Image (cartoon, rainbow, N blue to C red; front, side):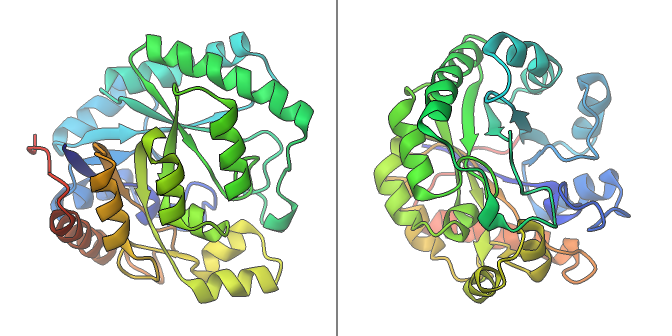
Length: 301
């Protein structure tokens, strides 16, 4: 069993709220990610979207592309339309050697709108599930044929957010639909990470490691806050800096024989929480915690 350590550029520049870290150049993100010790990075909004442009930047820092987010709209368009729409992104992830694509249904989502409370996130009807599930199966089957796993990302403010949503997703789709397990979004949505690992660990193909501040979760719920307001308020932080028990999470991943990426995330304001110290601390913590749990590291490139 081998794992690789990666980092999301959210530590440097927020994808959903550009005012956080907008001044930070991509070159700084890549250089600091590698200097901290990370083997790979995920895509961010400042990344070039073609291999001809992105490949040399990654090669310059000896970084792999761990994955890249894709926003689907399968509640509104059919499988053929979605496959056609994803072609540029699929070409990039294949060219960079990505094996698990971050995939999230974002039709009707509210996580990008700071004026909308996350409590108003979309709730799927039975008819919605009857439309969405077979389309996800079909897309996952197509991606498998291209050598890429679907890593479905449960996410605050989207149709698949809470425990009951993930339960329905897993029950309604086949094994081709892999799960991206995001520790922070799981807990913010009211889930228990260890319970999710017990129930759906065999479907996990990618892991996002972000910590949460429980008092900010409580405050956000009490204020009926939007997702982005919660982010600005500091609901998420780097692994080891919040209230989640990553030792227990990693021990469970060992039992599940997980192999793949552990990707550090922390959607914070770089002017409040400077990126470079976060990159250093998060790598050191992930490296030590994974090693203590018995997660074997892949040989560095």
